[in-house]
Image (tube, rainbow, N blue to C red; front, side, top):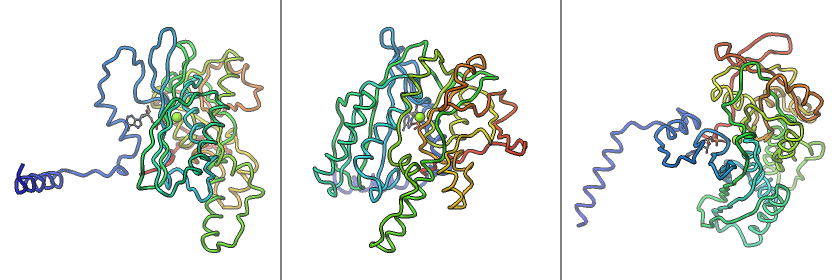
Amino acid sequence: MNFVRKKRIKTRIIQIMSDEKRTEIGEIGEFALIDQLAGNVVQYHERTIKGIGDDAAVFKSGEELMLLSADMLIEGVHFNLSYMPLKHLGYKAIAVNVSDIAAMNGTPRQITVSLGLSNRFSVEAVEMLYEGIRAACEDYKVDLVGGDTTASQSGLIISISVTGLTNETNISYRSGAKEHDILCVTGDLGAAYMGLQVLERERMEFMENPNMQPKLSGYDYIVGRQLKPRARMDIVHELADLSVIPTSMIDVSDGLVSEIFHLCKNSNLGAAIFEDKIPIDKETYETAAEFTIDPNSCAMNGGEDYELLFTLPQSDFEKIEKHVDIHTIGYMHSQDKGKVLVTRNGNTVPLTAQGWKHF
Ligand code: ADP
Ligand code: MG
């Protein structure tokens, strides 16, 4: 094509683009964007049991169900290398992916690791990242089977896919909760968020005074929860030992309330949770007080806890009642009763999801 014609076409394309309505992603949000994209996706294979919309996709594979999930971590969005050691980052990248397999009540099997590397990174730095990746592969017994390596102009990008296995009896979708089911969460919440506040505070002080030493002692637990999250595969195995199969499950990556909203939406139900039942560690509580942040708000809307949130029939309550790391925080009720919080002084108020906003 001659140059003048090419140029005319280019000008026309720019005109068409500028005539079209432009919607900012932030206007509709990440979840609405995914819903919109999912609405136009066609599935060609009968063996694809579940596509977009759960913690992992589900495929039939002989007698078993295969799980597949992907998660990406981007420098400056998900981590800051000034306080995130590369080895921890490698571990975390695997753990957060395994967490999505745990959320389907499955066990992880294989991972691929794809990297975008800027020229700031040396071979030794990438080796450090892989030390963490290998440690996580050993802990969760997953095989690293491939990936991709490319240059990046915007820092470090880590994109991981993970496969897992479960079966039709054991699988837990977000959509399976039933009215009157109890709502349970593992571990404690809000710690990773408060850990991040401490790390950010120290980073800001360091930028003002590079001779200072970061003051992290006394914050070991919450900083560890931010830098070294674990996937709750221990809970998946313990639930199996107790003969408990969650009717629905999700992992807490964006914040408790945001995940409750997902379970409610997918199961066509509402939920009630009790403020005084939400598990918060002492260190989270005390640090929140120091930062004059409401600890309940950290626990409900802080992200990156990677705990499991699930529902069980009331008849299973006795089986988990004495488990030290499983907390019953509420119950599911009909959709018209809404999503509510029963506060410490007995008031019932609507739950509001803030979650993590990337856009
Ligand atoms: P999680 O927090 O458990 O990782 P997400 O909120 O990231 O889940 O994703 C929710 C669902 O949307 C998943 O099924 C995921 O595979 C799907 N999804 C996310 N982004 C895209 C995309 N760009 N295209 C297609 N599916 C996507
Ligand atoms: Mg998830």
